[in-house]
Length: 84
Length: 84
Length: 152
Length: 152
Image (tube, rainbow over the protein chains, first blue to last red):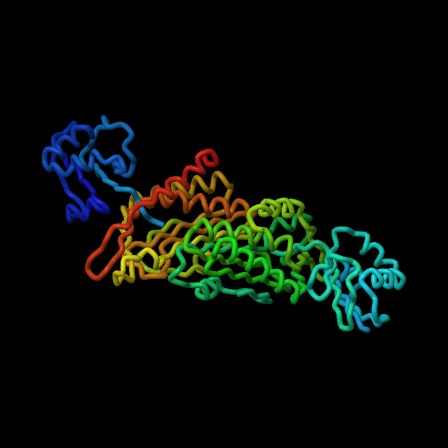
């Protein structure tokens, strides 16, 4: 299945891209997907260990890391917001 | 000396005029002027007994009733305001 | 800027007058003619605003100066209409501008609370050729008390 | 009305969109680009606003709906700019309209306080081709806590 990951703020700047499209095994949950990303690039470890960062699946904040992912899901990785 | 009296709100409506010009003796203070007005028309008794009404001499609220009046002074008689 | 005016005005014009690179937050309050002022089954579509202009200007300036001093505002604008004002139209507009939102918001509320009880304006409901005084509200007096210890 | 826009806007147009005979009080907040964001002796004359648009719209709608429900507002408008914004220009505008001023003012403050910590926007200072992230402020998080018991 395909998962889009969206980057913002300093993460977008550091990675120098707005998004990635990952092709992963079906039946992954968010926790599995985290491990997958960390394995791909150690940078994600920093992201997942930073408790100021929030994660959204399809525009809904993740409350339980065991949430199942589905084909076409969009993961948003959000550093602290500074709008207004 | 001449004293202008300005009427507003229900007082203006009741008297059906915006102002009066009174020719009075020199050396009157505000208290004397009150007596003068009440003598002229009993209606002023109602006005001076109504503690919701405020009195201004030359756009300054009267704090001491013994304040001296001067030729050309303007007395504003103000029912509770309702602007904004 | 303090103005007593007898016709409607544009908010953008007044906003332009306070535009400054020092501003981070601007609060604007608009008071309008509300239809539930008219709950007596009478055909009314306007109010009439009376004013003791020279005194009102002085009072609005005093309120503005207090607000600027207390909250270190960059600017404060007060515009008040007089005369006939139609249902839904603006009666008063207050702009407070500051570096930070807390100051802009708090001072804006102070100005409208003070204006309601301290500035020489009087409202009448109009029906046909007749008009009726709108009574002062006790709540307005109560609301203004909360500023006693905040603005000295 | 919730809008994310990439150019400046007129306040009067937005004010017209909420005009109603039910309104007695309208509070408008405008957040602008302030020059003291730029205190590093760098030649800067703008900020850049990044946004996660689909999420931000949803978050702004949630904030608006909470405000309308809690203060029984007649309307609530939120406009947020994105992209390059020049010094002094508007970043955000919030309108809350109500019968009474207390509700309009309080809800307006709630909306800006929430927006600051909950909506997916990010600010950068721009100098030449370079840009630098503007850090989140701890005070904003503290300010938002005061609403915890007021809006549930």
